[in-house]
Amino acid sequence: MIRLSLAQAYELAESILLHNGFNPAHARAVSDTVLAGERDGCASHGLYRVLGCVNSLRAGKVSPDAVPQVIDQAPSIVRVDAGGGFSQLAFQAGLPLLKEKTRANGIAALAINRCVHFSALWVEIEQLTSAGLVALACNPSHAWVAPAGGNQPVFGTNPIAFGWPREGRNPFVFDFATSAIARGDIELHRRAGKAIPEGWGVDAHGQPSTDPNVVLDAGAMLTFGGHKGSALAAMVELIAGPLIGDLTSAESLAYDAGSKSSPYHGELIIAFDPQRFLGAATDQHLARAEGLFAGIEGQGARLPSQRRYEARARSQVEGVQIPQALYNDLQALLN
Ligand code: NDP
Ligand code: PYC
Image (cartoon, rainbow, N blue to C red; front, side):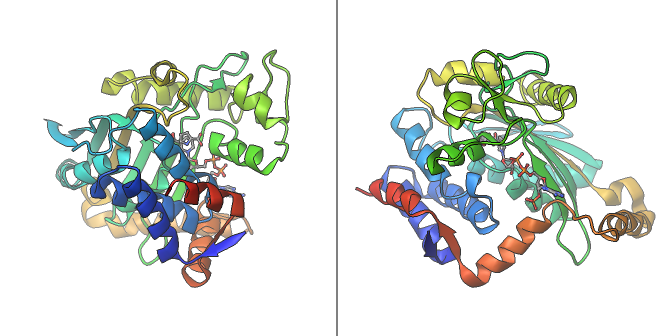
């Protein structure tokens, strides 16, 4: 392992992205995201993702300099056309109007279209909870995941993330793939030469496999929770695909045409303003929510994101550690 300060990790990502042709705005936005992932102990969506960013650019599957266009679609709907660039800058462009519409209406949605997407969703969710808003986000990816009862990939790994603001505390945030695990984690097992646990994927005949090469290259990933994860994955395909006029995971994979680039599709973010729902009773009801969290933690269970917040506190003091092989692969992108 090799240790980097947070500043060094950011600088490494940004210099690679700039060197390979991304403009400064995209390089900064993407570096912020991958640094956040690495800092919070989410290696599958940390510095490792810079390899995929450069691969996507070299394959001609992401714009290095697209300028997102913000469209005031309806009283409660903001649309941002990412123009084939990474999602981060599009989210940044749409965020102010999303907040404004949420405060005005109590609920509003941001639909990002035509974006190349590789990031963890909690990065965006936290930008809404820090403004006192409740938030929900989801998106398709590439069709890698079989539906419950089948063995042919049709869904993406389709993450769903939710955030709830908490006065004076880190927000309650969960963020997970509707597959048993993010594909990035299986890729990291492959890089490390490790088998994967049973339940993550199947081979080409639908038989359980613990070989990451088989699951990634020939078989299919599985949904979490059987038919329940499968239905949630279908919901994500629908509300962050056809509903917002964008691609499904199968269409994204077809567009990829074997280049192994990051998925290209849309993203849906919905925000809720507790003040608008509750008015003068807001504090009273948010206090009741605290009772729920106390009921979870009071019996020794942990809240989602607690591990991440602990990793963040640690990284801010100690920096981060990445495998030497990843560091070497990243350095090679500076040549
Ligand atoms: P995990 O299964 O590792 O964890 C998902 C969530 O569950 C996290 O909020 C995590 O909190 C929480 N959690 C884990 N263990 C516990 C526990 N014992 N008690 C309470 N909460 C727990 O994540 P996935 O592999 O499903 O997804 C990882 C990331 O990949 C996500 O950030 C997701 O956005 C991203 N992703 C992005 C995709 C894209 O298309 N852009 C596609 C698929 C995934 P904690 O972090 O604190 O452990
Ligand atoms: O890890 O499944 C994943 C993933 C897909 C797109 C970005 N991350």
